[in-house]
Image 1 (tube, each protein chain N blue to C red):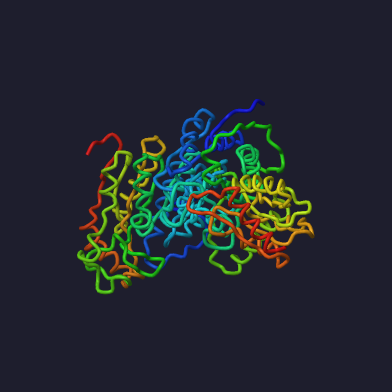
Image 2: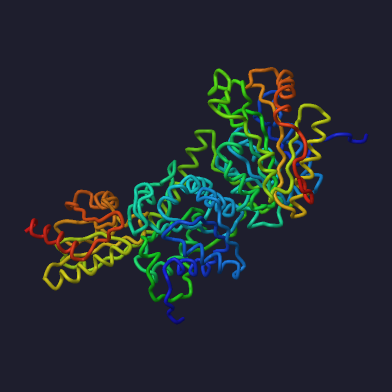
Length: 354
Length: 248
């Protein structure tokens, strides 16, 4: 198929419809508005339903209802809106229902700003809502990757009966790039949904969608079962890219659009005979801890580069497990790191290490 | 021998957890009988709330979905948009619907969502132990209004049916009571009309049912019924506020 030039938010919508998404419930918030706008135009043409809810809270609860009813359903929002959705997300995870949630991240805390940020790392990987649950979290670095991951996001949600989050910083939503809609991979073997609320027709026992278990022993059992599922995700779903790892003196860790800035810095440093590698998590959860086993013996330290005041850096420390000193470089509030900024910081570290 | 009475197929055999004298049992039965009589049990999907009726999913003999606090109308909206040909209803108390869920109930009515809501108003939070609700009457004691509710501190009790009747998308709005056999029959008639309104695609329908809470009101079941008659009905008048085709 030929490449088309699309804005990120609209490409997300197009990819979701191609992945079989039939229902979208959302609420306006910048910088993701082009996505619900696109869905309001295109879903009805594709036998689907778009509905603008009265709030993010209602939108995610409509998703909860639609997912329970057996539909392929999605919502999108941006950071403060995702915070509002967390209640619904933990219910959906607890009731083991599939859905896809898109988060086009903006700066915080509070109302924050509307420029790109990665300061939702903790919000999307640490549960966000109450209880012991996990989301499968994809963080594409460009529009093509985002489009390619969308089919897997919906399929994985169905396969695991768990919410999947697609995280893009504001740039992913707002930038335009050429993309190609490839024929979807068939990575997951999907089953029917005999558990869905479709009406008994008098032919089966009632289906109950529920996250309540008042008996502590029963709830513990439920949590243990969820953990088995999360462990399967840890085993099968980790995705990452490594770049320029050979003879690297320092390995940087960056995701999303930040990783592209970091690659520019790495290429520039290479010309100056400084070897710097990159680990780029594509799944933020499960975090690609095993990528750190590929770090060469030449490496003296790690540095997490983020559009935040330092959130993923905690996971980098856990993954490094004391093997390397871990540094941090970040910009926040909608300020974007520059290759020059990264280069300067790397040179400081190299100088210090030598 | 001819059978003159039997339990509705609309309820499961599970023993309910409701307190002695609570009228939830009557209201459950009315809803279940209506679903059976309309022959839509196999086509129905109910949404249970958070509150005393949180376990309603174990009692209604149809597909059920347990919502978070106040969000039942949003969950029901998601279900109805996926299955527009099914009968979708919510069963909510006054803490759930009239306090934390006001946005959801107003907007489900505003959209004219073709679902039915059974709103059980007993003027108190039952499940959490008798705290004040927006529907608690002036002077009524609650564990968070130990000296009784005052207008100065908490305003006047919220009349939900009157409020929703101002919204065009609310096709059927009626307040009923289950304090006497005659009123129970009227309540069932209203519940049936509400579901018929949904089946005919007329819009959102709601029946507010005045109910007792002997446990948290600190009364015997008989005294609680009398208190409802003497105090609730005068402030929350029973009757129809809106039905399809009528302009009020």
